[in-house]
Amino acid sequence: SSSVPLVESFTRAAKMVRMSVLADALKTLNNAEKAGKRQVLIRPCSKVIVKYLQVMQKHGYVGEFEIIDDHRGGKVVVELIGRINKCGVISPRFDLTLGSIEQWTSNLLPSRQFGFVVMTTSLGIMDHEEARRKSTGGKILGFFY
Image (cartoon, rainbow, N blue to C red; front, side, top):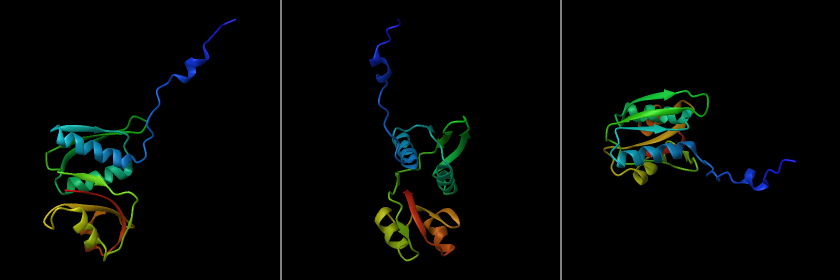
């Protein structure tokens, strides 16, 4: 008779439940930028994160990034160029009408000169200026400046 202790199966460490993958990614970006790192590994990776990074890249806030497919959650390695002061996620994803974009940007961003509110629209994920140009509303994802 083999006597395997019952306790053994319950001693695994409790893992924090990841609520929002995007929030996690942006927090990781923020922390790495504050610590002055040259590059940062974000995992897991999602389509939303990639689109968000593309918006940031377009405005020159991050450098190149490389998506690593590991047949699990996926990873992204992002080159940092020291431009990000802060990036964050807005949860829940509030509705952004064309008229309310102005209000949100003034609440979230430090100045009218720089910074972007990222939103998801029926035309894809874009910043608030592009949404205004295409005159479309949507839901707010987050911001960076």
